[in-house]
Length: 485
Image (cartoon, rainbow, N blue to C red; front, top):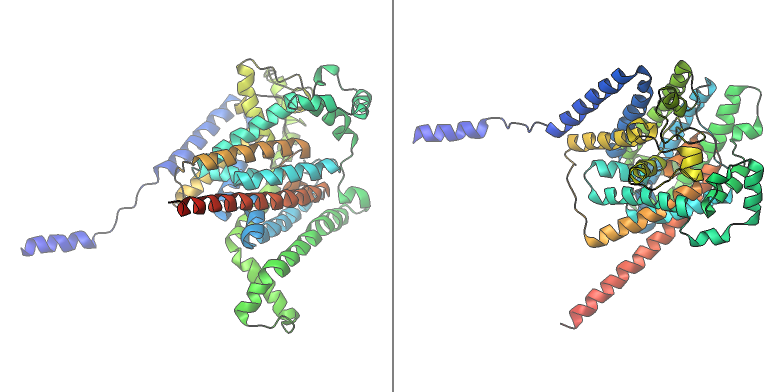
């Protein structure tokens, strides 16, 4: 009996064997092996690998900070929580400083978006979609890496809606092409073979006629460092972000802070107001850390890609593909190669590549045939970045034991599909998502990013109200059903 007892005690005292993170190691090993193979095919493919590995890093920080624009605006309007929104503003400030340094050393790859009302409209449509989808473009990617199947549905519909909208304009819109757009498209010298739909003329006759600029372009100081830091960073980044932080503090966090510390709102004082602001940022600690990481590496990403372009003597990766004989799917202007963090357009390219293989010609329009191309997914720089983001998020989720396959119910599938379509249309009209049309433009001094941001806030607000009405309707219906029992 004593032997059995001692065995039992020994078993209780033995240390627990930690479960080996097979998934994490597998993802890392496959990433390394794939990188070695790609570099062995041709050393210039290090450019593709830079996109992939920076994407992986972005995925790590996105998942760690649960960094999602949809969460930021939804939490503010629905439950009055400002954690993610505050972290987002800090990330923009950090990224703005890094971007200014990159610009000062002439390693910038950024081109400003047109300053036009289409940015506001596109942002509103996109903002409406992200609330239904349960994630913005960056949030959808990292949640896909966590095993959220609804996010994969969003990604598919985000890509599909862009393709259908760009290639067909849903048919009926083709009857409403303004004559001014047709005239402007001819003046732009766009070949007629790319002009068929409303969206083709929107791009050629509207977008291409609106100039994009940064604050530095407008002020044009003679000292480049003063121009970049004062114009782009201080005026277009720091001041607006501080204003947003003050607004969300006064509207949402201040009341809680006063109540928690038993202040009277009239006697709180400036010093305590600052402490209140700080307490708001401390609450967002994890998101802030994730945002700082994103800001630093997004800036480094521009530096590395710009340097590689100089080393290998090209401006657009399409030039490299043509040199190597990979001419299939190259647009008239090359391939989509922004040179900085971007999401959404490349997902549409990936799905379009599959449709091309199935026989749907998608190279006869402005989006794919003239501007972005449809290269092989393994030779598509920003698409590899998206793959990397999903892998990085999966690695971080596995590390924190937050990875699990989540199967959506029918309502979630419907919301994901609906939201994904609105997101895709917003991306095409606004020429980007919360990253490509807001986050990156703003930190590089492009005021059109704030137009897109305002649109996102407006669209998200109405989406939250719409979902609220749907929830109330469902609740009332369920209560009515109980009364009839």
